[in-house]
Length: 497
Image (cartoon, rainbow, N blue to C red; front, side, top):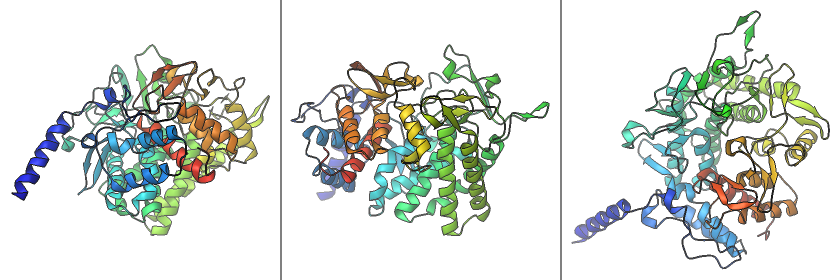
């Protein structure tokens, strides 16, 4: 009788899951009950049976953090956004192997950068929860398999063994990409060096949090890392060898009416001289670089190469990889210090956004991380570093950063990815994460709380004057990063919300 009863429960649960609405639709409509504060934040977690990964440790963490938040609106918003990755994006998880495929949200594909950031806030709890640690370990194994097969991809399709159908990429047409890729395995082949850094980051961060290095012994990890380090070395090289063109490493062109969706120089990017930095065809926004040495992405890569080397040194594993990673990190840091700092007419010495080694400099910033604003968060410099402070002043200036916007609804850094007059709440959170001023942190929290357009989730971007004009109601990276900011803020400034 007991077995029959349990079987009936499972059949009912499977039937209910089949009735679960798409979270793309669910996230676009507010659901009760609402918070009692002025913002009336709705309850946006999907029903329990519709959640993609239930974890009691995270449920306990939600209760614990919420008990430290006085503001009822923030309590509700945090409860919505902190578990959003687990609630909605675990498209496939094999806990035996293990492998994990995380979608980015409303796009059914796994970005290397996004998926790493989606799990980082859970790492403090992974050391005491085997299910959670296995989920993250599975993501590391999945990323290793993806990058080993095609190191130049930024987003990937689910593996055939998952039983999930490959997603249709509406912009993955009319392409000329080198090296070629299989669109049944790779969702998008925009080469971004922050993908490499994110892959290193999730592995070393997981290891530091749990002491578990089993991913090193996986079928693909060592091979993927070796390939990546070789590519990094190749992409440090100048465009020209005397009067000859150096052998191309990667290229991307697309027939498009938007310049940000293709690359210069028949897909190879604008020319560069050797600096020690590494070329990137695209930014973390998935928009094309103008000058190929993207400074914040190089800073991120530098930090994570050091972390990779330090991890392998402690583990006494792969000495050739360990030494190569340390050498590359040193070369990149030297390149940034020598070629990635420019003189601004108002702010003095600042970190440039993009350079080419010839003296060309782009002074701006983008909402996506890694950004110039995020450099202390990345660990490249201390927040008190004078060049960073000058850079921060430039980035947060309406007069000096063409992608900083200020309106009646929100103010902060935007991106060419979402065009003019749209601020990314994630960038507002980054401003707060990199500030030691409690008033500034509180201002960032207030701006974010008021930016959800009545939907109780973090959007990709919001119009500075009209909260009804936003992009992406389901954006998992934004949700988890802002929740990470909340935990950081109440830890550093108890009672701030």
